[in-house]
Image (cartoon, rainbow, N blue to C red; front, side):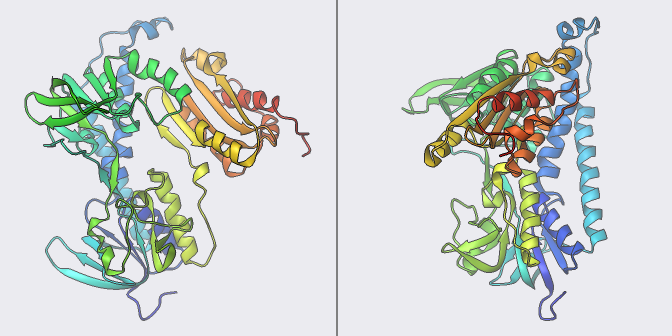
Length: 484
């Protein structure tokens, strides 16, 4: 399928999960493919994100479980004081990163993808420039180009990082040391996950959130129960409505807190370390987008649902973008799905992405997950389309499997249309919530209704019955016959 007048059929700039899936899928479908990466193969997720952080969460979670003498005693288990080795926990994460990175690289080579090391950029339509570490600059032509450069941690103005006492998640995953007192700026999923790790390993945490409430991006009902379990019951001092207006590295680290509305000085904290977990920003500055006239929105590349990059709201020929650089759902599996969809469209198939059906998870202990619409968005849709919104709640404290694990603190919230029963979304806090959400994600993807879903048989006793109960509760609220 290779065209003689191009060096490649497809060049992918960025070898994170989005770029990896795109390159692999394209090569497996007969295209001549190259992938460009300036850092480690695997991008943020493999090297500085989901993979190492989940290794840290797994290890620290076991420490937390073994150290919870009161919980274990309810099983009749007497536990001794827990000892752990920080370096071996860090080594576990590093070893996992190395293994996944090696597997990913081997998979691409086996598929026939050519790996080009250097900083990739556009050099006009259907041309990619690559600056190697040696300084050598090369230009390749390609029929199609996919941009998958990902994102970097966002550091707000006024905060100075040194990578040791003030750092982002990029440095935190190495777990080089355990501060006695660490402040975490931000209470989104990154902040919550690292608070979970640090408190399990004996650190005192102060969580600072600029918005009015802690955990502002989560469903309010989920936040209420999750905060009790993940923050209030642990050695965490959570503060909302205050801005970390100035942070200076050192021993100690000095933090100036200001009122987020008035910007008036509130107080100064002195802590051992600060983790800045205030979100992520796209890596698009070095792409030379001006060479083809593409303008970004706060650094994000505008795309349509087929992953085509837009210029003046119209698709730019042969240019695609996937992953965090697009600013959609900044999740590894979203990037992977976008990459596959982009290639399918390059191959002549017509595919679009359904963001509503893509689940998200926070891997705390217990976990938080969601899919579909928030309750606010669902209410807006109901108002626009003239249907009544249904909301039901199913509790882990009524689930036999959860009770057998002494993990009854959990909630599932299901959103659905009362006119036809269609599932619009779900939010879960509880044991294995990240696994449970996939069942609802599949239902959202297929636009299934609670009448047919309530008829499905779930294994007993399992946590999946929490979802079954919600479906059956929802079915009672609609007036649609089973055959409709």
